[in-house]
Length: 198
Image (cartoon, rainbow, N blue to C red):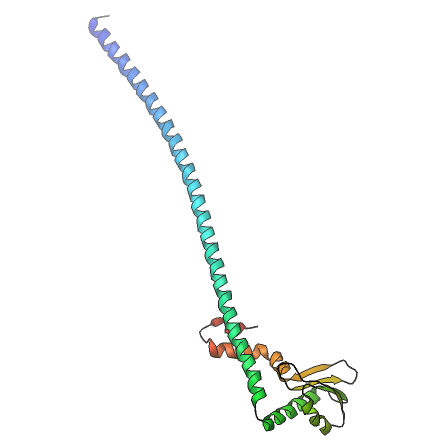
C-alpha cells in the first residue's frame, strides 16, 4: 500500500472511530437526558400532588370557615327572632283586660272545636277560672300561675287521650316555625334560606 492509500485508510479508520465515539457519546447523553427528564418529571408529579393537596386543604379550610360563619350568622338571627317571639308574648300579656278576655274566649272556643264533649281544663292563671263557668261540659282542673307570666288553658279530653295546650306561650310555640319564617322574611329579606326556616 502506498503512503497515500495508507493515509486515506488511517483517515477513514479515524473518521469511523470518531463517528463511533460521537454516536456513543450521543447515546450516553441521550440516556443521561432521559434519566434527568424522568427525575424532573417525577419531581413535577410530586410537586403537582403537593400543590393539589394544598389546594384541597385550602378549599376545605375555606368551606369550614364559611360554614362556621353561616352558623354564627344563623345563630345571631335565631337570637333576634327568639327575642321577637318573647316580645310577642309580652305584648299579648300587656294587652288590655278586655282584649285578653276576648282572646281567652277565642282560644277556648277553638280548643272546644278540637276536643268536643266533656273536657277537663287546666287554667294557667287562677283569675281566668270565670271563663270555665260558661261551658257546662267543662270540668275545672288545676289552676296555677305560670312562672314568668302566661295565660290560657290546657284542654284534656275526657278519656285523657288528647291534651291541647292553648296557653299564649303554647300557641306561640306551635306556630313558631311559621312565625319564625315570617319574621326572618321581614328582618332578613336578602337571605334566600328564609324559605326553608325550621
